[in-house]
Length: 380
Image (cartoon, rainbow, N blue to C red; front, side, top):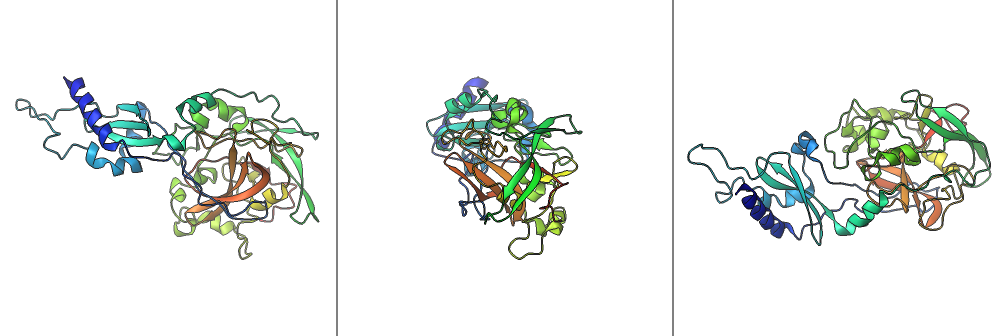
C-alpha cells in the first residue's frame, strides 16, 4: 500500500514539474577577451545527482529547481497530502528520509530526495545543459594519455609533493611578452594540481579544514591521470568557503588576498604571488605569467579538433566542467577576484589563444602551480 501511494504521488509530482528546467553549467557571464593580453570574461556552475549517503549535506540546502516547485512537492501543509493514523496518531510516510530516486523525462533528469517522509524535488539536470546521459557515460571511458607530453623537445623535471607523495612533471618555461620585445623564464608544472579529498558532485556541505576537489564525472581516475582536481575558487586559494559567495574585501575571512595586490590601477592582481593550495615554494599561476605563455600551448591529444602542438611543454588539456566538455575546453583559476566573481585563463577547442574569462567563484576549475624561486615575474 505504501509503495502504491508513493508511486501515485510521484506521478502527480512529475506532472506538476515536467516543464521545469535547470542548468548544470550556466553560460559564462560573457567573454570579453580573445587573446592573452586582455583581462575580462564569463561564469558558471554545475550540479549532479546526490547519493543516499549525503543525507546531512542535503538537508541544509536546496537547488533553484526545488524552490520553484516546493508547492507541488512538499505536501506537508496540505490536508489532502497528510494521512494520520487515528489509532497511533503518527503521520503516514511515503518514503524514508534521505532516500533518493531519479526520473528520466524528455526535458531532463529529475532527482528527488525524501524529506520528512515525502518526496521533494532536489534538482534537475536539463537535457540541453549536458551532452546527454549517454554522452556522460561515454565520457567515463578513460582516454589514452600516453602522448600527453608529445611535441615538446625540452627537458621535463620531476617534483614530489611532500604532502601526499604525488609526483608532477615541470619544466623551465621560456616565455615572451605581449609586444614580443621581452623574454623571461620561470619553472611551472606541466600538469594540473591534484591535491585533496574527492567529494561527489552535488555536495552542498563543505569542510574548511580539508582541501576538497571534484573529479570529472565523479571518477577519481581523471584526477589521478593528469586532469588534476577541479576546485571552487575559494578552495583553490585556500580560503574559507564563504569567499566563494561574497566580495573578498567585504569579509574579514577573505581579506588576506587583497593585501597582496599590486598598487597599479587596473592591474591590482596582475603579479600577485599567492600560494593557495599549491605546495610550499609554489604559487598559483597569475595573470602576468599566463600572458608570457603565448602561442598554442595546448596538448596534442584530447582536443576535439584543431589539436595543439605542445611545443612549449605546458600540455594544456580540456578538462571540461565536471560533467561534459572533456574534449572542448578548460579553465584555470587566477588569484584575481572581482566582487562575487573572479577570473580564469580560458582554453577552447576552436582557438589556440589564451583568453581571460570571468566566472562565478563557486564553479569548479583547474589550477597550475609556478615555482617561486628563479622567477623574475615574482614581484611580491
